[in-house]
Length: 465
Image 1 (cartoon, rainbow, N blue to C red):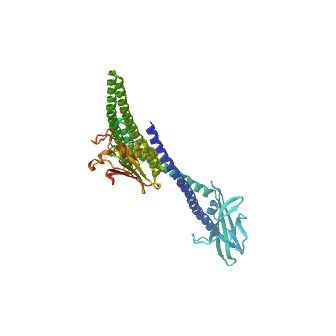
Image 2 (image 1 turned 180 degrees about the vertical axis):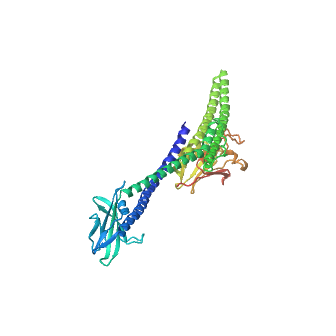
Image 3 (image 1 turned 90 degrees about the vertical axis):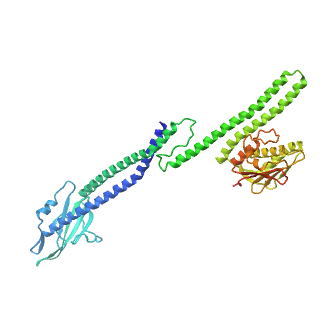
């Protein structure tokens, strides 16, 4: 139901935006239709006004040296009341005196120019008569008779009701057409969006029908080109998720195996000690159990460190890295491990003069330094040397004069629970933790033979922004 609601909202949002975009176009179309209709009405009715004026001009006659208007029946019939407005006329002689018609019809202004649309001395203009707007035509009619010679003027006016009605009729017709066209367009868009979203719905159903542990890539069949990046991103995510689950499964299996052995040995040692009656045997058993417990605790701490690396890496990926002084961190950890190095008879030296800034997670960087130094101290004989360096370019080096690591094993030592056949008792997690922290910080790590003859570990961090 949630998926249908989301799909419906997408359609509704698209239709709403299309409606918002179409509304100004409809308004502009209505405005344009109104004025185009008004222009068409003006053209049609102006032609009628001119025809009426010409009919009146044809009926002008002279008698006793005066101009008279013999208005024909057809012209008089045109001036009758109609359903939309009224028509008025006026005839002026050559001296500008009223011959026939209505008085006080508005005269054309000096700025009104003669029309070029018709072969006549006619001027069209707007005015007001008897408190209402009118449209007028002024036709100049030459009079050439023996008794009279000059220019007569015929004015015909019409109220604007008929023109307005015609313009509104055209506007309403246009609005109906545009409205139906817009509704049809929205309906077609709705159907097109529904058809376009159908593969997405099938894809959603395919994901829902899968088993919880089915992380196979989604098929790209019958998917539009625009949806392929989404499906590809989902496939990449499921691939990373599947890899994460596989790593967790292997880690849990390895951790269970690694913890089972020392815990079983610890339990067996304690049971054997309990069978003895001598106090000195009990003490020896407790001392051995204490050493085994320390190893189990160390292994558990390393396992917890690996778990913390996952959250720390996510924090770094989400932009949670801090600006750290690598020299200061190395100095603090070197002071903390100085007593342990002295106890083992190892000389621990620090070479970190100037601040070196990196972007990282402080807990993970401290864990990295701790594991590198602990690994170097563990593989250096009494009287040996361990050097911790922080160099320009965000480079960290840890070097010892121990036996080192052969070149063919330097890649494998970063695998979890890998132990070299050197007689050590570690869990094989120290360098694995280092490798995970390096990857989380997008740094580079390399193992080489150092100048002291032992192992040289070099970590190169990206410089701080």
